[in-house]
Image 1 (cartoon, rainbow, N blue to C red):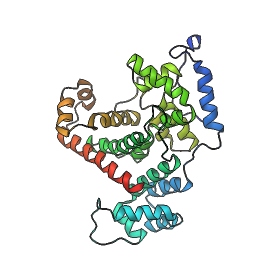
Image 2 (cartoon, rainbow, N blue to C red; image 1 turned 180 degrees about the horizontal axis):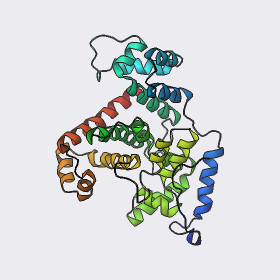
Image 3 (cartoon, one colour; image 1 turned 90 degrees about the vertical axis):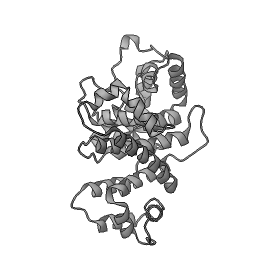
Image 4 (spheres, one colour; image 1 turned 180 degrees about the vertical axis):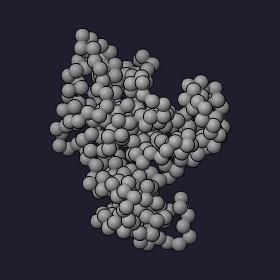
Length: 310
């Protein structure tokens, strides 16, 4: 398996620190599962094909329509989305080409990825310590917020922002579904020691959910920059440049926690007192109320679209 990001460094002389597990053995077990298990979900070919077409400026709407028409379920969801109250089109959209024009090419790619990922990991009764509905709400919102941060900070558009945001915590899902006993040990450790889940995972099993998600993204043959962003969104080298893709993903993740359950005015007041955030923004002259309100609206939008895609 190719490696594009820094591997977690382990002190082999203390490989059982934290949760008392043999970290080297645990990491080998996880890597082997992600490499060899045949029933591990894989991204449908149509997702990768749509991503390629949308990212190619020479692609036409007709090419994308021709590809999507092979999948009746996706076609139905896109038509339903185009006709939803969110877009407010005054007349019924009954053909795929018009639906793509209404929704937009980039958005179509995002919706197809969301729909496919949700189908790959279907809802099931929550296992102990894991709320799958909350997980997907967080993932969908972080995808929208990541795009919003690039726009709000007036940074160059990042075509992988949505996919990375949607999949940033996919390593948690892998832990819960395939290594549930390790997942529970990590969550218990986080509560007992008042540390973040990522730090607890690094202490207990030697690797955090970001790296696990990065390994899965490698198996799916996602673009290198998306793999790196997922892998390093919590734990990354100290010399990582400001506004790097992994750092933007990290802040989008934090913004979801900040926005969820609070009013925009409350969030603005909190940010004005948060020195870490102020240092991160630096000299970028952005109207903070505009940024926060836009991110809040994007989060609300993600919930509406997720309902349509179910």
